[in-house]
Length: 210
Image (cartoon, rainbow, N blue to C red):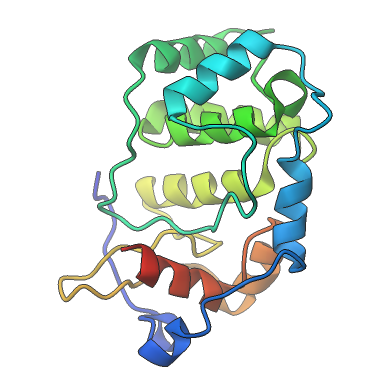
C-alpha cells in the first residue's frame, strides 16, 4: 500500500558507489552483538515449543538465526515471501484476545519473535496490534530492531514520517532513497538504541539488497 510520497533527504539520500565499498560490519560491532545476544536461543529458554515451530515454519525460517538478523532495511516493492493464512489468523486472535499469551522471547525464543515480525508486516491491521503487544512486552521480550522497523512502516502507512530511517523505497531510476523522515540528524542515536546499524550503513545495505 503506497500511502506516502517518496523524497530524498539532502545528504542522506541515494548511496554512491564509494559508499557501497564500505558496506561491511563485524561480529564485534555493538549493534551486531546486541542482536546476537537477543536471538541466542542456545539455552532453550522458551515455554511453547509447538508455537515456536509453527511460527518458524510459517515464516520460512530455520533456527538458529545468524546475527545480524535485522539490518533495519526495508525496500518498497520487495514482497515478503510469506504465505501462512492459518498462522496469521492465529496471531490476529492472540492480538485481539484479552489475557492471551503473546509470542514473546520467553514464550517462543528469539527466532520465534522474529518470525512474528516477518508474518505481521504484510497486514497493516495485524501489524498495528502486534506492535502494541511487542512494545508492551518491552525490549527484553521483543526484538528492538524489529519493533523499530515495524514502527517506521506503520508511521508511513498512517501518513506520518518515519523516525529510524528503515523504509527505503526504490526510485524510478533504481536508486534507493528514503521515505519522509523526522529529525534525520538524530537518526543514528535512535538506531543505536534499537540495535540497528548506523544510518549510512543501512542505506548501503538497502542499495545492495535491491
